[in-house]
Amino acid sequence: MNIALIILAAGKGTRMQSELPKVLHKVAGAPMLIHAMRAGRALEPKRSIIVAGHGFEAVSAAARTEDPDVEIVVQEAQLGTGHAVDQARDALGDFDGTVLVLYGDCPLIQTRTLEELTATLNDSAVSVLGFDAKDPARYGRLITDGDKLKRIVEFKDASPEERAVTLCNSGVMAAPANFLFDLLSEIDTDNASGELYLTDVVGKAVARGLQCAAVRCAERETLGVNSRIELMQAEKEFQNLRRAEALEDGVSMPAPETVHFSFDTVIGRDTVIEQNVVFGPGVTVESGAQIRAFSHLEGAHVSRGCIIGPYARLRPGAELAEDVKIGNFVEIKASALDEGAKVNHLSYIGDAHIGARANIGAGTITCNYDGVMKHHTYIGQEAFIGSNTMLVAPVTVGQDAMTASGSVITQNVPAGDLAIARSKQDNKSRFALKLMKRLRALKAAKQNKN
Ligand code: UD1
Ligand code: MG
Image (tube, rainbow, N blue to C red):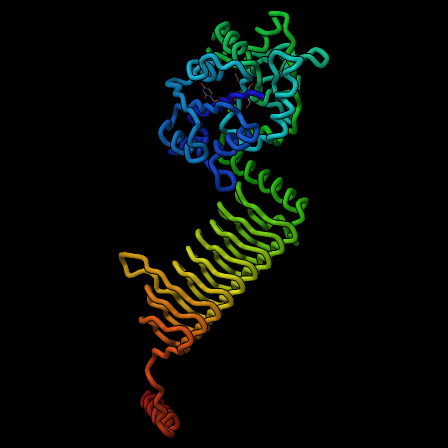
């Protein structure tokens, strides 16, 4: 289907109590606008237009990071949803496909629901997505006659009988472009808000003797965010949805309610995710990996058979090959670890390349930052880094090489060599006993004085 997506995102969102435009508030690590864009983008629209107003620059920038080809039109003053859609008229020109209108503050809408909606356009001039509301509150009401949609009435304009209707308008609408803009020329501001209502196009189409359809979806999908409380509800819904999906896709989670996903987390089947794991944006975990309790991952790629955590932190650019082991209190940043490498305890690995099956001892630090610049550390395959080694980058430890525990490595270590970079041990014979005796005597003398 030849689709043009129009996403309305010009509103201020006063009730968010925020400097940030409403549609840029995040759900699962991505602005709500991006969620709407992704749901729409899956339909492979020919055109994508965002109507922006409040926070125009910031909204445009965020939209372009998701889709560099997105078109952005400005709505200077927010004169209503009908006026907002009309702002895309010039940009669409003689586009003769279907327009699909979404709201930028409605992050839970699902692609398959949008597909169901647009599929009804064969028999309907305008199709509207509705839901049976538990509490219809101030939503617009869908006035139907049997399975036909007759008109939409806004809460403010509705009679008591109309307010008793529980089938509500989600705001999502689909119609042929030419027809929609034609109808939009007919609507007026003769209503309780003095705004141009997009919803009025339904009544106009019906007045022309055309048929309109209401398609129902689950209420949670249409959750529109107007306040921080609703933002939190959207987050909760998203997480529940994502957890259920992961379980269905073959991921094991003993306590799914404690696992936090990002909008773009990818998890392979037969992966186990233990309690209290947090996925920031940009994480892919391949099949059969284990993410143990209390680990935090973002911008990381974890391959098959890896074991991460408990209490591990993978930061952006962590690229782990198969069967890598990352243990407790280990932080990995912008580093590639080849197959079977192990960093099991209390270490920081940043800007490094660790060769296959290398073993990084407890307390190892790559000293990657000199206060101004970042430097790289290279560790060859099967190297053995002794506990508490400081690797002062830039530095290379060759393959099969070793470093002695407690070493501060400032020079390259050739392949197969052992580097010892610490002061030599000096044992003072019987001196510990003498020293203790003296200290105890000093303490006793002090106590006698008091
Ligand atoms: C709208 C619908 C209502 C529906 C409800 C669902 C109309 C007239 N009413 O009401 O039937 O039940 O959504 O949530 O359409 N926007 C602009 N420019 C404007 C006005 C709005 O871009 O001039 C954008 C907002 O940023 C928001 C969306 O359109 O993303 C909806 O606007 P909002 O003011 O929240 O409409 P509602 O009164 O909730
Ligand atoms: Mg609203």
